[in-house]
Image (cartoon, rainbow, N blue to C red; front, side, top):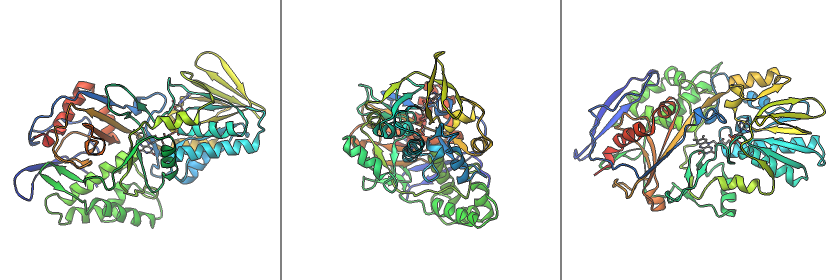
Length: 466
Ligand SMILES: Cc1cc2nc3c(=O)[nH]c(=O)nc-3n(C[C@H](O)[C@H](O)[C@H](O)COP(=O)(O)OP(=O)(O)OC[C@H]3O[C@@H](n4cnc5c(N)ncnc54)[C@H](O)[C@@H]3O)c2cc1C
């Protein structure tokens, strides 16, 4: 399947207004500027505030989430989680076979690594945990409870890792630049934790309006094409002798052609499918051409959004644990008796055992040296798994300029890359929009400076202005 850039004008049922649908290229280079065919219905005021992430250029993440690239397997994740000489243990979302790319996966991996370490060691030992994210926080919590002398070493000047809540008086609620969406199906434990810590969250389900394609007066409330086409392709692919990309499976299974030929009224089936793939890229951080057909899934359930400051979960896990911030671990030397850590401060630290939770992107870019080098199985896993990019942009306005109370917008009618938006106004009473973007579009967004991004987003949102 190949995508080309096309622009559609959609009349609302009443014919009163138009909605412009634009397909984005999967293979194209630089982001194109908005086309004149985008017909804004008003002008978007300058936001009173903007906050944005840039995870692919973040030295201590080098991407947002790991994903199953074509040819990778669950065994690669297991291999990455295997300890070395019972001295070096690995955790982090990339080592989670069941819930990769998620906070719950990271926490479970931290729990698993800490439990395995505790079985191998004794509580008189000193243990270092590298990384104060969800995996490191959980590992440190478990080991502390079991009586170990734990020290957490974190390169950033904050805890949380890819959970990053920014609290600032100018924003009415904490801005979440990393993980933010929770699944009612798989994140029950985190939701309980949020409740215990009195951290607010809002469910999209039951909130007013979750529209798939919407402008104030032209809207399609459900996508009858994208999800079924992807499900058909994945079902077909699982019966094939070897893995291939989701893009190939959509083509070879006939699902893309069937989608394109389906009678969907105002929006072509091909456009609906493409928009659905955009949405998938905000979950996996990767394009359909990169995602494995054997391991890609989507529960499709409306998420729960954390609105009260997600980082507090990590702060709570690390309560009472000795934690060094702004301390980068450059190297890990190990033998069957101890582990020595080479720190960016020029110092070294010797401990009995270590749990390494740095992101897959850091390992792929050799941001940490191991001596002796990692075994072949670890290196194979690091090379086989993919590291995707998801970015988010928060916009704060003096007052809402939009008239819709739909809480989730999958935008069509824009040449901009950010097509997935959450409207926090009906959920929190605050005039805040949050855009999420994944894959190549996210990396294009990271290349824009703030002024370019704001200008582009004001164009994107123009159909919502009255
Ligand atoms: C934009 C975005 C949106 C996301 N959305 C969701 C979502 O909605 N729901 C969900 O469940 N998950 C989501 N995720 C994924 C989720 O955030 C991660 O899976 C999870 O937080 C990873 O935790 P971790 O502990 O494995 O890694 P991290 O949180 O990355 O922790 C690793 C820590 O190691 C530190 N570190 C790195 N290198 C070094 C070094 N050399 N020395 C010392 N410390 C080092 C890092 O600074 C970091 O603090 C999202 C991620 C991003 C980026």
